[in-house]
Structures are given as C-alpha cells and as structure tokens.
Length: 485
Ligand code: LFR
Image 1 (spheres, protein in one colour):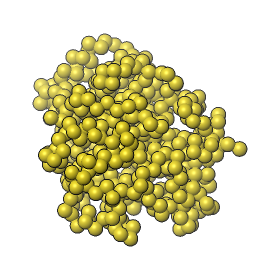
Image 2 (tube, helix red, strand yellow):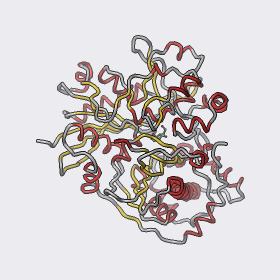
Image 3 (tube, protein in one colour):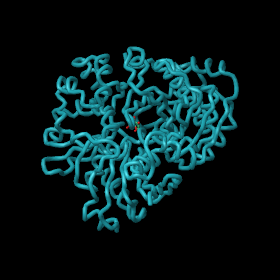
C-alpha cells in the first residue's frame, strides 16, 4: 500500500500549524490538526521568538495529528538558535525584525563589497539575512559560548530527534551558500570572520532526520518508531514545490502570507548587476531549482495595522475596502521602511503624504491603499523578473494565505495583465507533505507532486481586466525604493 499519512509542522511568522496529509498516487488530502499563534516577544534587549511556546504547540499538534508514517518541519527563513557545548539552547532566538542589524550591512560591505557578495551568494540585500545577524552578534558572550547554530526548523527537528543538520534550501537564505556549488561560500565567510563550523552538516529534502526521541513519543502519545524526514525546510521552498504548474508551462509564482514572494523558478542563478540593483534573490529550491524572486512586505502591512487598531477580523475590512475607488493612494510595498513593527497606519499615511498623495483617513481606506500597493508591487516584481531572467510568463500562480483573498487575487491579475490561478492556501504544508511522500514512495519524482496538487486541490482562476496604463501611472506615484546602493 503506497498511500501513507504524513504530518507537516509549518511555522509561519504569525502562526504555526500541524497539518496531516494523506498521500497516494492519486490521493492528496490535507487537514488541520492544530493551529496556534506565534507571538513575538518584546524584551528590554529586543524582539525575540517564543521558541518554547512554539515547540509546545508542535507537540500538541503531533498529539492531535495521531499516528503518522513520517513528519517534517518547515518555517520562515534566516533565524536560528545557538547551542552550547552540551547542546543546550543559549537564549531566545532573535526575531528577524529586531533592529540589531540596522547598521551592519555597511560594516560587512567594507570588507566584502555588495557586488562581490551578490556574485558569490546570489542573495538579495535584506538587513535580516543570517550573515548580517551573525556579524551583529560578533563580540557577544552568547556567540562566544556557542558551539552550534541551528536554523529554526533544524532546531525543532533537533529537539524532536536529537540529531543535528542544516537543511539546504533554508541554508541558502543565510547568504553564506554559493548557489552554483550548492555548498558553503567559504571565502566571504572567512573574510567576515563568520565561523562556518557552527553549522551542522548540510542535508537535503528527502534525507532521513532521525526517529522521534522516546520522551517525544511519550509527550505526544505516538507509537515509535516515527521517522522525521527532511523537507524543503524553508516555507517558501515548500510552497513553491506545491505550485500546481503543469510541465512546460511558463509561469510566475506569488507566495502570499506575512510576506509576498514574487518570482520565477529557474535552473541557474541570475547574479547580474541589473539583478542585484533590482534586489532579486536566488534562493535554492528542491531538485536543483533556483527561486529567483523579490521579497514584498505582504499581508504584514495589514496584520500590523490590525494589531494597532485592535482588530482581529480581516473580512469586514476587505469587504469595505472593495467598495472604495481603486489606486487613490499607493506606497512602495517593497520598501524596507515597513519592515519593523509599530504604528503601521501612521507610516502608510506618512509615505502617501511624502509622495504628494492623499493620506488614507479611515481603516478601510488604509486597507484599500495596502491592497492596491501590494498588487502594484506584485506587478513590478513579475515584470522585472521576466526581464532580468529573459523569460516570459503566461500565468501567475498565487499560493499561500493570500490565495483566499479574492480582492487581492483580482487586483494582482489586473495589475500584472495576466491570468491568476489561486490556490492552494496551505501550499507550504502541502510541499512539506509531498517531499516526505516522495521519500517514502507515495508519490513519484519529477512533475508528479505538482500534478497531484493540480489534480486534487480546488483552484480559482482570475482573468485580468482593466487598463494597464492606469497601473503604470499609479506605479510612478509610489516614490519607489530604488534598491541597495
Ligand atoms: C516567508 C519567509 C520568506 C523570508 C522571510 C523571513 O515566510 O520565509 O521567504 O524571506 O520569511 O524569513
């Protein structure tokens, strides 16, 4: 019997979930076992992840999931925990939105110039890349005591199995991997005094990651042995693995959640000067692929406004926003000025005023401004990706939480002038499950996992409407961020 059951632990920046996937050659059914909030914690020393709370949620989720043939862990990228010589966690992992990296890039670039760094790693400039975090931590007692660094999914996997590794797709987001060799970029690391010996050996999606430890079986009520299987542990890599594109199709993808990640799947990195100036990244995907994409602030802009307003339900805001005139005021949703938490409605209004546009006055107007701005940023990224990689696309696949947001999907279709195919919303969990299923013989190689998604998951198609010139004109109003100098 090739039909098996897999648990996907999928940790996002705003919540974590444990999903159960039933997979066979013609079967793919996903259900939610447990969902729990991920609440970052402000401490005097800065913004931290509540990693023990998250781990508790994982254990509760595995208990709710019940007996499975394997499980796998994915999460957001770049962040990590440090372990001492005995394997004990040193402090709470730092949140990538923490301000400790604010002025670090200039320091790094004085040793390794940005163009050289881009040629050797292919990674966009983002202040939160692990490389900058590690340089910011140099000289701290915590880093001095550290003997091991585990990226977040690898840390959870270590707690579940006692085994340490560094999963490759997520490792590429550290800005310490060479996308051509798919191995460490030893030269830049040495010049920046970053100790690559802190990292556990590389492992790849499909590799076994060890069985659940006896005390984990006890805590979850599972019967051993339960193998943990390495998946594409970067959530975006897992989500792109579950994009329901057909073989040979010319497509762009848009992974929507706290972030919008917009781009193309390529066979080789593009590390030209033009691509660096446009701040496109080359992250490693499954099966030797490259995720050539841009980070756009995404639904974070709305989540953060809702936190300020004390609102918990997005549906009424979207309904009201849909009734408002389009493109009244727009901001550049790729601008790192929106990265840090705090007073988001205020910052949106300020950005509108600074570019000579009316500041949104109501919650619905702010929501409308954000959705229009996201659609514009999606359009710009997808246009530029095609140009930079010299590859035309005919369709945009929208996966992740935003696939449920009909207004955002229609605006994205209109802005891009391309049809949008939306779904699945739980793409990261599906990609996680599918990489396990492949390793355990429940689904074939090559195009089989994506074909299974296309054949089994409900998808919604949005046809583009309206006039491209309207979007062109709006784009000129954003006072857009011109990228790293
Ligand atoms: C999405 C994501 C992005 C990464 C950002 C920070 O969840 O993983 O791909 O750039 O979070 O880690």
